[in-house]
Length: 187
Image (cartoon, rainbow, N blue to C red; front, side, top):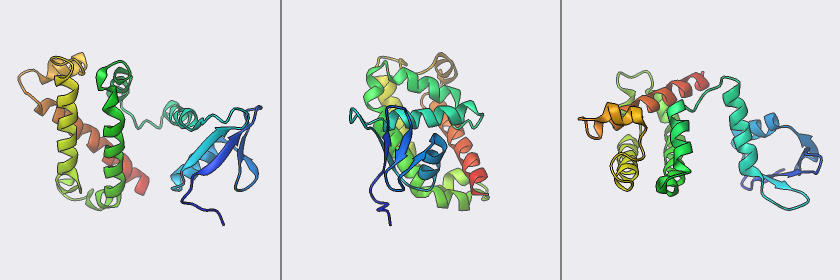
């Protein structure tokens, strides 16, 4: 029986074939994606160099899903991610994303239960903490870079005269879209 607390070790051979060390067979990216959907963490190592290739392969899985029309990441989020690689705020983004997804994971079953209620956003566990995190993130993005440096031109134009509420409304819309996608996955 495999130890599911430890990441599933996948070795990449020089031929670029991926080898599952637990089952002693070759796997595809779709197999790895399924392992992850089943709740298993994976680690992909290059057999010859010992380099950890996990990030590269996970990004490839995401890109393939997105290219097949299974869009989870809105264009504005992708744009912001690209911007984060070139700004000082890039150091904040990984922690923010990790915390946001952790809250989403922790509250996923509760979100699905509350989807049919009149105001699912207000009922979502951890919503207030998530709002506070997102507001702090937006203040760090805009305040630390001088003015509205971390925002897109569209967000700057929409947010003029509204303060942080424009940003909060955009975040609410993105969360609502994530909830719709979660609801579809739960059916």
